[in-house]
Image (cartoon, rainbow over all chains, first blue to last red; front, top):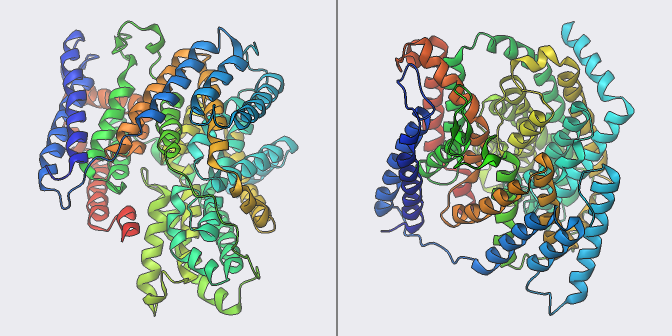
Length: 144
Length: 496
């Protein structure tokens, strides 16, 4: 294949289409005149498979070869973990703890090397969010 | 006379002290995020959405629109001074704006963009005021068939304009439709693709998807890079343009405004198209095209006017048909929905104070931008010295609070995390996320109208080509898609 990016994009669409298509029988399809809840998803699933397969096939004839770039897996893991932690903590432990965890994880590269910088970011963000969102507009979020 | 009356109602609303305050706040924040690289209008609106919950719909929309056009406007400042588009739409300004700055003519370049933007803003405001009520009236003649056709048009054109392969972009729109299906089926009340999860009964939160795709994945891919902190050496120099500059600029400003306003009305186009088209036009009309790319002021004046005209006239399809032009606008639409206002032909009729208030506030906002940007440009540029590594943790926290607070749902934050991962995959595979976002927000309207159209036509899909208006829309779609596909894409031009 010449354009790896387009090939894998195509495969991704095919995969989404197939996953949807096997789910469709759980829903009533109905007819074109009286569409059930499954009719429109079925059309989309077919379209995804068709477009995805076409994209994958055409990737072999791409004008210029293209490879998928390097994946920033480590930042992705830390940022995702941080957002998940925020979601888990915001109601249980409050805004301050959730913010702290998110910032620690998002700043994983410098927590050890530049602890003061991270602490400064945390304090600034915590003060700002607490002032604006909790005291300012009174969002129903606990500080602690 | 009707327009005058309506405009006076609008100015009555927009000139109230609170409206002015939120307009200023929006323009300020928009300028800020437009200048700071790494925060786009989408992220900014998502971050600040919670601020609007306590406001009236008018105040919140005035502020959010201010962020929207403020960001568009300010993006060109960094493009000129630092060759760095603060917003994706200002890439075109880099091509001649930055060479001008390097020749010591940053002042005139900034001045012309400010004047061009302001002029385009004034014209666009008038066009919105004149055209929207007519369009809203006309769209009452739209049946479900026509409505479905025009949404298809928006999705196809948005896909044709993407710098990436059209087929993957269309597939992205399909994926957006698929995500839009999740939730309770409106016609039958049956839950679809919710996998028994009650949090999905109302569908996937658009704000969460937008934050995942545009904020989180952007941060992840920027973290690995060291974003160059701007060297703030460029002198602004004399601000006022020379007579020659003005003579060269006024026609491009007029042409750019016309072009931007015309494209802006079409659903599915983004401001990037307009500024790009204006640049191409100016280069073709120029007596000496070789000057372009080396600091031709026409290449700054035209695209900047087109950009701002389109950014504003996009409000026409958005407010009268409920069809946003891009991801940032889609977020504005969902902000309206949070406030219980369904954009569509009814807005002009049922909420005249909202509609005309926003139109008037856009003009006021553009005036504010003129005042904010020119004298304070040195101050704004200094903000660029803030390194990205200090900014992104704050962006993450604010975005997460924004997502959470829309429904007070921790599940929505998880959705944002998941779409952050997906967004990175899309980025790596060169799939544009904007059509997905557009399709996601339009899915309920599209499906509803599609199903109703099919009931009316007794299940005969040829109804879409036998209804004259729908046929016209579809022909226009094919013609425009073919036209855009044969042109060099904005993205490819920049790679040359």
